[in-house]
Image (tube, rainbow, N blue to C red):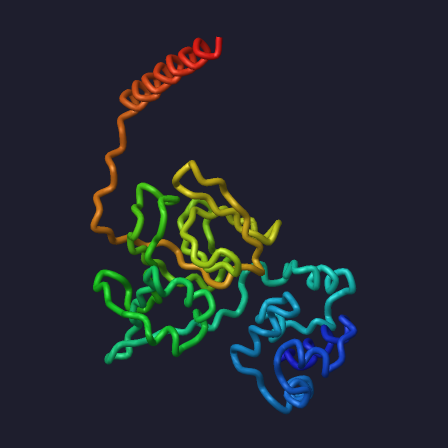
Length: 269
């Protein structure tokens, strides 16, 4: 494990003393010294703290000897472009199991979504979530269910429950497929993804509802990805209008708009 050497290297490249970095991360200098000298081993939250501070994936801090990189590669890494992992960060998933030691499906409802953004890696938080099982899903896979809010993914309705399968390697994200993505700034979002991780280190996320504009999420802002499996809702989606009916409806709306515009112009004159 290269963690001890890597954090010392990155600290010195930022011209920070142990006292300064320890203060920033909210730990004692002796604790930081212990990590750098391999006297102590960091926990999950500590790894995440260092990852956020340096803008480097946890997996990079642990597995890659940063001394083996060129100066230009190190500079690129420090600018937030973790090109060596391209989305396959180490993700330590907090989860729960049933009495038979089989994976539960945890429910993240509307009220829990705000807490999930910070507590997704906290086993105690995850244990407080309601759980259930779906017998038609593979017991060897990890699933989680999230409650939607809003109309950005219509015809999937507001308050629907979307179940996803945990995606360990983000290189497996398929462009055009739907994913639940936990982001640093936007929290939990359910979108259609365009995978640009390899070339541009980002995902572009699209809504099914064309009213909403697509937006980009940098790989360093992504915390979890769940591939869409199914959804559950008490509402029946609106029927899809046949093409001929849709054309007629648009024509009628255009006609009504023309009449309205002419009326407005007459009043102005």
